[in-house]
Length: 231
Image (cartoon, rainbow, N blue to C red; front, side, top):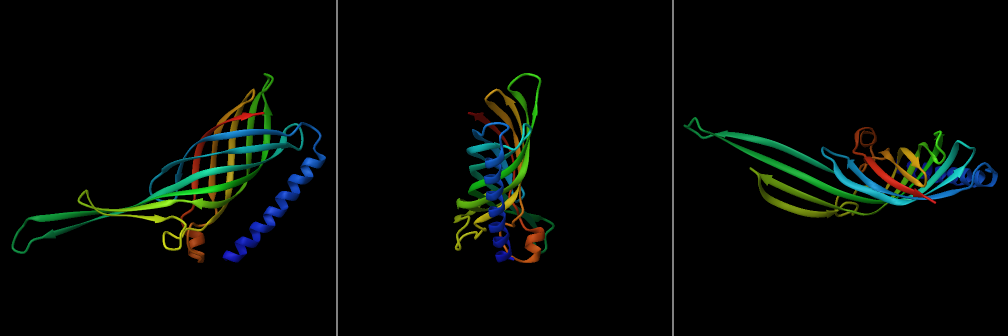
């Protein structure tokens, strides 16, 4: 399954490169533009969200007055929090008194990627010159560049254990060092400025290679707000 996904990834990259190259050659409607983007996100692959964000550059390569190809390159900080909790109630022999012990375990992970989305962008102009709405959707490809996971254990709200692991290391959490997913963005154009939100859903499970992992495994999910400036 792992080799199959890598083969698909290579073929997808070749198709995308050919599409972008062809678009640059034959597009004559509008000039190519560059923009810088950055913002904040909430990310999850477990029970709770973790704050993160992304920052990078994007190119808009027009196919027509209203449709463009938008490749981009971002540094993306993701992650998530997983926790489990249970309680045990004991009754002392010969007594009616009960004692309840609550145990909490939490894994808080950061996962940093170099990410390349390649989206089809639809431009909806407003009546006012230089203003409009951008809708874009497409795949993204990501490679991990680092991350840490902190494990803590509490018994009756008192911390009894704390350990730190490499999120992607073999001796740590051993998460996959690549991700492929789907992203969409909605941005308002206000002259040279862009403001909007984005959503990303990873299709590769963070760990494991079985059918069950691919069906039910944890995946990167991000919802963010970002700002940009188009040159």
